[in-house]
Structures are given as C-alpha cells and as structure tokens.
Length: 91
Image: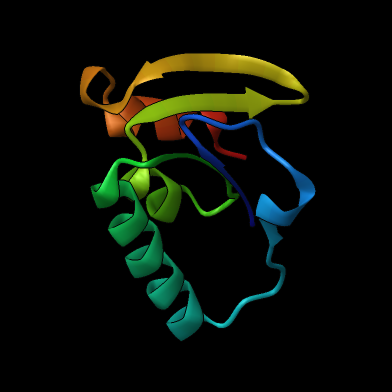
C-alpha cells in the first residue's frame, strides 16, 4: 500500500510519501478512516496504490487500474460498474 500526499499548492516531496506493507486487517480499517478524513478536508491530492480491490474502490473518486504495467481503465468511480472493473483487473 502506497500513499502519495500532495497539497494542491505544492509539489510532492519525499516527506509526503507513506509506504505500508503487510498490514493487519484492523489497521487497514483505521488507515481507511484517516484517508476518508483527509479527503473530506479537500486540501490535498491522495494517490493510493493498493491491491485490495474493495478497499481501494471504496476510497476512490478517480480510478486508474493497471494490469501488467498498462493502464486498462481510467475514469471516475461513479461512471464504472464495480463488477465490470473487478473482472477486468482480477487474476
């Protein structure tokens, strides 16, 4: 899981990159709550790179789905079928 935080008025720097790996499920829930809170403040862009589909989809406004290094879908979450997207990126 990688989060990239950037305020709308500044460029991203190394101090704004947070990387998590092998996280327990209860911690993932808390991280989701923090991301939701940060989103509600509308003061920064958040890029979430995540392999758990439901977690990422639930937090997303804009989606870029990649498969084998290529973007296979790009668009607003409200304009895509969750089932169709899951099928296109599923293993």
